[in-house]
Image (cartoon, rainbow, N blue to C red; front, side, top):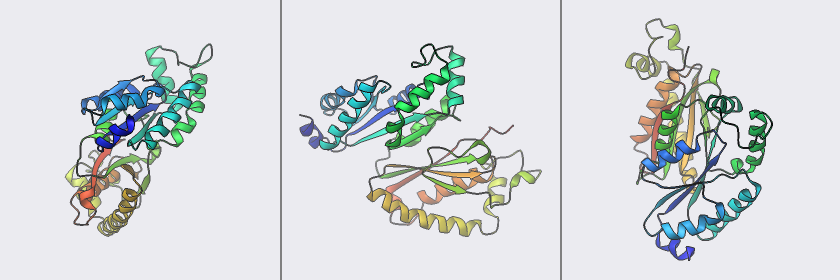
Length: 299
């Protein structure tokens, strides 16, 4: 039975991958497969428990891509997830999303209709799907907004989330972004770096980024920035203990400046470095990585 398998495979994990058509479910699945996950695509939700029973003896990490556009599949998914919880099988729901305008462009570029548009417009199909998936998205453990990502950036995002980190109980993705491109919808916490003087107005620094030493030194050398980082790190490490206690596995901390090129990049890199080298007792339980959503996007 599933319960017996779950008891003997305490380290097993199941990730259910779903989300909007055109948002990148297949890319996420391929990236997880490259990381060594056992991936099953388009599995009927009713078969989820059976899959775990068959695979748990030899596979510890299973990713299941499920299309829940149909009402029956949606109900089956809820029942399947509830059954996994009752059997003590660890599972997460990953929802891949993108803005409507980005989804429209993607469907138009491939010249394929949206699965739910019928004789209507692409945007009508997207609206129907978004409404049907509203509840699933609201309970997802992880939401990835692929609107601003190209194929390789989305793969890197998945790698940052799911690569093997045996000692880490909480994986923190520190995501730099530019406010002029919008706050990331998958952010759990948001840090605003616009209080720091902007290197954009320094001619020799303008063409550089927060990954370059001159910009990094300029940003981190600004008055009060070191104190700010020290205090924020202390607050975050206290919060991390609570997140771990509540069973959180993944967390996205979004760090923003105006364009996502200088200040937010430098701060994200520095904060990830600090969290990974901290002497706080929580440090061995947290793994931080920096990713830069809008770097290279400026006109």
